[in-house]
Image (cartoon, rainbow, N blue to C red; front, side, top):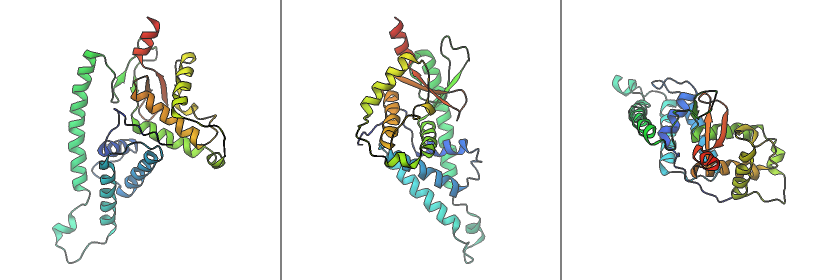
Length: 245
């Protein structure tokens, strides 16, 4: 399947690290580098499996994490001075993360104020309140939330389904059409339910890529009641307004 997708919501390697740190409730000043490296590489493998366009910075960060991990596994050099022994290989990474986090939060705040005026499609995880929504505010899910949920889906599918030979072809285009058709009858689809009837690995991947394609086209919104919670899929408000008018 060669359906490469470049999303406007696609973020960088520092975004992924901050996402993992927050998801795992890790102290940013004391990052368990082995654990974070393992999870980071798992996300990269999933992105490559999905044939997403990966910026070179993701691979550079993977090399950096592996290098830091290897340095922390080495015993201290007795010939080095005290200052050298006290040096933490993670220090530069932590500095970059804190600096990036500060500017990202400032940018998100400015973006939120701008979007409040323009009422256009929001990219970051800021509260989304839909008119007539009795349950209140939601958070817009990120690409990494989707990949995390997709990873859990893959682990629940029996291995025999991955290798089952099927004559049917599952394309991203067909799945895009199917998803839009479902949303005509159901205003909300739960992400975890999309794959229950999947017959093989190709169908699972095609369905997931269809979700990403619809996000890129701003046809749908993905949201959560709480960060890292169940992901809901619904039509973009602009399309709902166009349909009712």
